[in-house]
Image 1 (cartoon, rainbow, N blue to C red):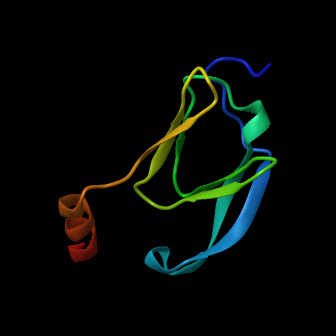
Image 2: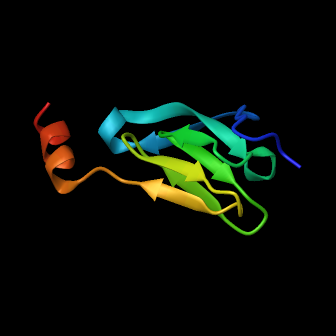
Amino acid sequence: MPQKGIVQPKGHRKVYIHDLGGLTRIPVYDGQTIGAGATIEGPAVIEEDTFTSLLLNRQSAVVDVHGNYLLKLPSLHEQRNAAAE
């Protein structure tokens, strides 16, 4: 059973992210080791047995007590402000 709130990447991978200028080295997390209450900030990859999630810049995921990922995405206002930077 993963420890509550503990998050350590299992490694890193280069992923093409246009908004960050191309190939970007980002952390990769093993979903089986992510405990409840943990927050993962994008950009990051979360690998599970049945799916893989890519969190982009300004996105995050929190794991609830049932192992569900609750995604937080930037609002349209935040996205527009980021695009203007």
